Length: 252
Image 1 (tube, rainbow, N blue to C red):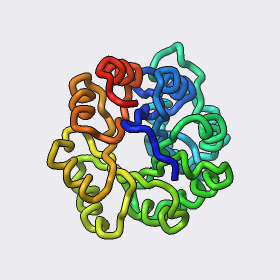
Image 2 (cartoon, one colour):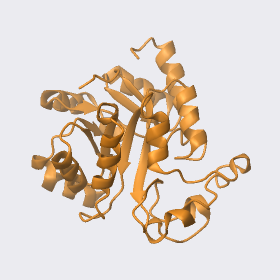
Image 3 (cartoon, one colour):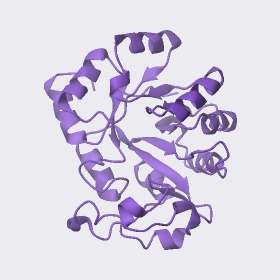
Image 4 (cartoon, rainbow, N blue to C red):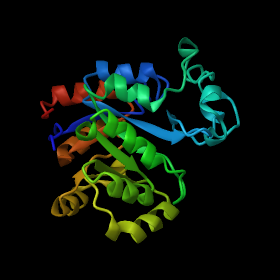
């Protein structure tokens, strides 16, 4: 398995603070800023197509109230998901995962987050693992999720794929994680930055797990994470992170 750079610099939803999240302009901004890769969110349409979108419903990014899983791929691809960010991004569409893997998979590291709020999530892991295998990208992706059942299934399907265990301050998700913790052996943990301190880093190092916090957006947060020696940072503001890493002469 090829080693990733340390610290691994990843854009969050591409560059979600600089362009409409999970769209081509956001991916290009992450690349232009010198990120090693970026995180994308994936869920299935009604007809089983994996698309790159974060929210379960379309209210926030497309002004609609429908759920992604209730719509066909053709219907989703007609939606404008750029105007909500700024009028200059009007007409941006929801990408298909295949397109993103084909365009960026050979050059960038992709953190593919599988969305699924319950233990029975339409078999999304089978679809995504198959796409990654077909393209020979097992060494250049992390599959992450807040759902430990999905991660357990990914490990059973393809143990060579790196798995990232996502964290958020949600009591139900926390209880679920505690319940399944003995069954998970992730490559990396992706907490929020406030959860990371020297004690947290020591625990994960003892277990051989890499720490890659997400939502690291403030300058002081970025510097603190780098100072703690995290193995990766996932940010909405790639240009800012790149500048701090370069100015601080942190390894990249």
